[in-house]
Length: 325
Ligand code: BTN
Image 1 (cartoon, rainbow, N blue to C red):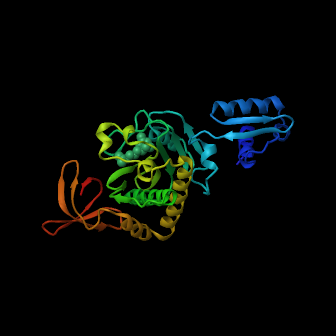
Image 2 (image 1 turned 90 degrees about the horizontal axis):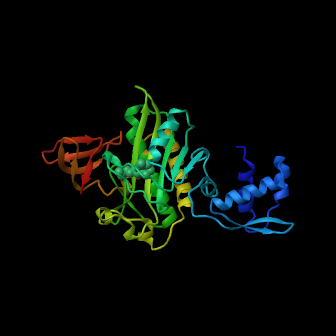
Image 3 (image 1 turned 30 degrees about the horizontal axis):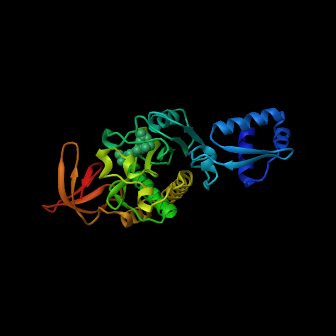
């Protein structure tokens, strides 16, 4: 990938670990003046970077803003494709809206749309999703696996397992998954995933994986109606979590598990998912738009549907529902 002079400057500042970086060298590399490089330094300062100057030696990095911008994510990113293209926003209505437009305009597999804040964050079943500035991860990932539309629910479960693994690795805590893809800590929701499709009759063109992770909220940051049902990683572990690092890990696991899924099918993902599930084996109530079912959750099907044994012994597969345990 071709870096711009500003990207190169930032990359060198990071790599130098606080040592000075020569503006002249970058100016020479890009055929620019030293004033042009100085302007990029000023732009980085506007972006929140604190940069010092040593006479005759160059610029050095003092502090990095706590932002989920491309530079901060890429510092930690270890993927081939996912997250290699990032569209970053300070604020927008919903990352899902932009991701749909980008996907329609042929955005490449693994393009990430991310924002510090959403003013119209969307949850499942048309519910609002609280997306306060700088507190969480509000992202939509465009993926283009080779799937038939009926396989799409499996990809939702791939994402749920990947995000859970990433949270485990970064924080050391072990969340549960409530079917299909709510991630819970001590019974409270820390992550929601909204999967939307662009599809032809026989083939999925793009899946938009909308992922919302509550990261650095204090209990008081949640509106009252969420205070008893939502939690954040910071509440769970008692300290701040580096959002950019967690995003990079999420992308890494989604890429890894999508490859496993494409190569070996759904069986290994199903096993992982069942290992994290707090739903299987429980007496549950599945509330759907026009039906309510009571029974025991006995597992997920090979398509990713939740299988329920009803009280009369019949077994039903469910595509989408709110599950009460
Ligand atoms: C749920 O209801 O559990 C799903 C919540 C999904 C929220 C994420 S935040 C990023 C993306 N943009 C949105 O508007 N929604 C999803």
